[in-house]
Amino acid sequence: MTGSAYQMLCRSCLRRGYDGGEAPPATCPYCGSDDVRSSRELFGLTIAHMDCDAFYASVEKRDDPSIRDRPVIVGGRERGVVAAACYIARRYGIRSAMPTWQALKRCPDAVVIRPRMSHYTAISREIRSRMLALTPLVQPLSIDEAFLDLAGTESLHGCPPAEALVRLQRGIREEIGITVSIGLSGTKSLAKMASDRDKPDGFFAVDMDSAAAWLAPQPVSVLFGLGKAAVARLNASGIETCGDLVAAPDGQLAGLLGKSAPTIRDLAAGIDPRPVSPDREAKSISSETTFVKDLSTAAELEAELEMLCRKVSTRLKAQNLAGGRVTLKLKRPDHRILTRSQTLSERTDKAHLLFTVGRELLGREIGGRKSYRLLGIGAEQLGPPGGGDLLSLVGEGESRRDDLEAAIDDLHARLGEDALQSGRQFTRKHRPERDATRQRAAIETLSGQDDEDPQP
Ligand SMILES: [Mg+2]
Image (cartoon, rainbow, N blue to C red):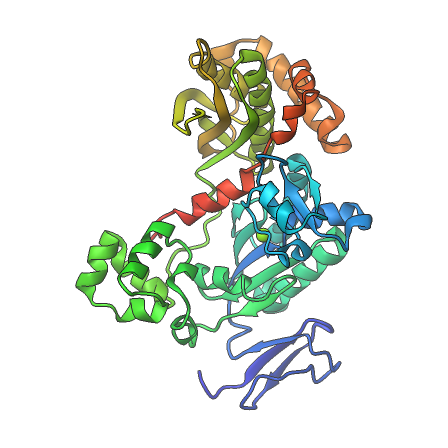
């Protein structure tokens, strides 16, 4: 396609244009804005990756304009970690998953805000419904990012996908009040890399015709679906860039990557046949917390467990998912990790049912001199919520608890996470170590994705 005209879209006046020149146009011929995007295939590309910019921190800034120009960290204090850092905080080198104390050392003036997961999931749902208005092919990757396939939607929207996406981006900014970055290309892997290129409030397109050349100088770590261990093995053998990977001999790659070698070589060359599939959700949804002081009593641990079950339940409900298996995770003071799982007779998204199962698993591990520094709970074997919700197993009393939980969800959604607490949580909340809770939900989802093998 080299030699064909540049297709241009102005993000200011939303007009489309064509430019036959040698270099992409720097300004809009209609309104003069320099906020233009152009490539030779811009109006033919259909696969997008959309990522909210510093999502939790952006929501907090939107809700409280007094912190708009300050460095903001959303995360736990003391032993907690950073779940999101705003762009001002990032200038100090603060990143997600960094321990909060370390972040505060770099930037003592940072405002630290405890995550409000149910609030973020409500906004995430709002954004997702806007995506679904563009195409049914939306594949969420986490609370704040998703793939979209807009192939065949041009006649419906009366414009190419690029323009529909810029309009979506503008609508989210003006009506929801947060910014998102969009990558547009012809494959998921390229779209994901592209959305990272122009942040925040960005829009970046990668043409298929020039994808291999665009990828060649980039480090192999940018490839979507390639885990950290695989990257380390490649680097240790001198394969640093995507170009190196494409050029490596078959035998060497097979030795380093096993059966996935051909798929990964394709990724590095810009070939990625994985479809955007709305059903391919996260494999598990979990939440965990580390304590300032190791905990050992049932009362303390159960109070934490109940709160974590609420968080997992909120995220399940936000994605219209339910878990068929519950896994409890404990970490001993010597960092040994213990997991205990139970399969359910029917999938559930209910906090009280997750808690019932989790408490039973926990009960077997409490006692004697056993203490724990970390507690986590996860829902696995995800699928759409089933009808009966374990009614056959737990009996009629539970359906009243379902009604109660629906009422509590409603209150939380309207009045915030602290509107209503159980006695267990209230007692815990008024102890100083309560402050140490860390919210790792989003980070886990991301790292889970990171370790995922590429799907052929
Ligand atoms: Mg994001």
